[in-house]
Image (cartoon, rainbow, N blue to C red; front, side):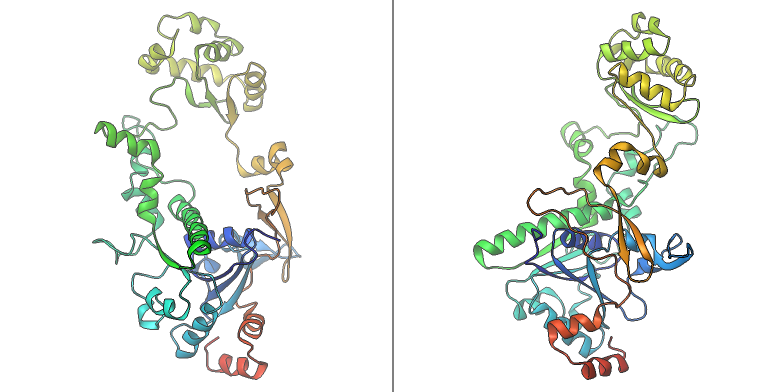
Length: 406
């Protein structure tokens, strides 16, 4: 049994932050029902290519984006703008533990599906709202998008090559980190609220905002500003306080070298055939290397370009110099450590035969993550859920389909 196998979750969220949260809960055993708009579904169902391949190797209609965050859930289609659809949601709420939504602030009030209304039906409900800017403040009614929040929350101001590098500009992350991390914080908040409910019997409302999360995860960068009043700057792949601690070009790719002390620096330049650099007064200790960074780095880059990525990794690992490759995703999933940890998994899919997924990183010894279901097709479980949860018969369900409610 999963750690959360006793928990029922009603998921009214779309795109990324909310679905990422509910996938975490589902991986831990919660019964998650994903509510989608009839005929349309989650926005990410249309965010392709790429698409998953079917058994014949042809593109299916299942997008890689949707697949990334919707396993272990059941999908039902309900038009919540209709009175009948709202009634279905209320009945499902009555026997759910958690509801998650990411509609605009107050948008669900007109449907009677806001926290104040649903609390009357289910007083101990955990209701989690995820928005761009939260339920309060002058920006509350603005739509929130990951890249905008990465910019507003300071992330892009410290990400990218330094200002003095030709062509440098602020950069977003390679994946939507504000969404993903808001989903992770929402997972934590929901589990904390469930533990509080276990002690008190009381439910509560959780207000999650992408901007709040983005600023919070700036961690030492935000703290450095608050402590010193100095605005952190972009440094590219370098460190402000350690040299060399950055990426280096090789003859065929890139590597990362993190020489945190003088001994490691000496080993680095020695295996590269440039041992004399360790004895140079400009580079003999870290404060001097930081001071003379602009003179040292070109010398090191000329050195690292003489060998391949694989050659450098072998040499540096043998010399006990912290290092690592910069892998593309083919290299990631072929890495022996990744393979040993089972990060890539294959699950059966009702339409595609087999589907490849990225496994959860959570490893619990007593209640391990289980992969019970692939990401669902749109409305795949509507009949099943309405029969199971609401005891509706086939005739009643068909009437709702006829009226466009489902």
